[in-house]
Length: 328
Image (cartoon, rainbow, N blue to C red; front, side, top):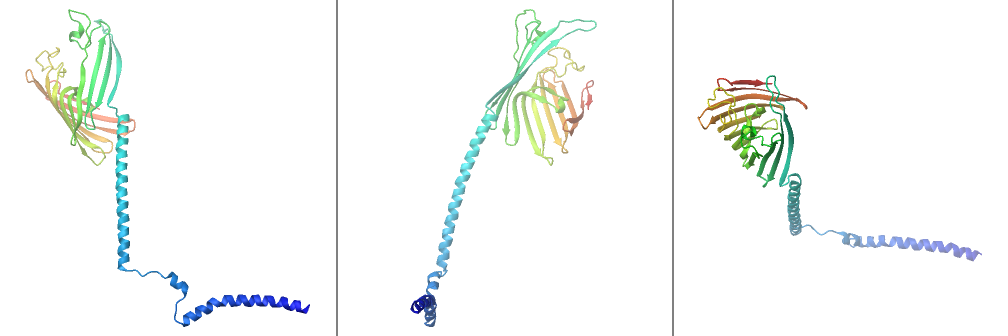
């Protein structure tokens, strides 16, 4: 028994002694190397290479090459994005701004000419206005308005001379072209050429069709809206002096007030966030006898709230009879 216990006691001692010897060996080797002036093996393996000018130049060259490749990639991506935006814009224009747009409205009119001492003939007429817009390109477009009308009482056109009551009778229809003009941009100027409605501010001193041209120019203002200046020139055949006592050529007749040369200058200037000052100068000269009329109007409009607007203006002409007007 004693021999067995002695053997069992020696085994742990040998094991412990072996572990102690193995664990101490690297330290001893390191100590020997330090005494001999050498460096540990681990430090030698992990030491970094020294930084030189050649290595810095090479690193800089690599970074510049990567930066150039990134810039080229950005240029290609920007070009692709710009091309995509153009294609999307074309699709949106075709959807929102079709090449040809036709719309219009119709109306029915019934004139009952019954007065105290006169009873006329009832007249029923039907009207249909069609608007045709054609987009030529990004700068120019073509616009027209056509009015189809007929007097249902006698099957005549409502625009005929003497109201359609002529000696020959029969079916007569008139198809006037109320508007036909091209509209576009010449630099920063908006241009109209053809037959168009010329309307002064608030339709106060002029509201007729004109065969001629119009040029509008806008100047940016502090209020975020442009001050617009519009010059108009052309010819009109409307009876703009109908009933004028100074008109010596049959003031109440069909042909007494037509064929006028028109010159007009309109301005609309924002002076506050919701307030504009307007003005209009116009001159009309009849080609037959050179009779002329000059008109001048000034006014303003202001938006009191979303649904309420206040407008007021006054006008004066050089006529001896029809020379003053105002409204609010």
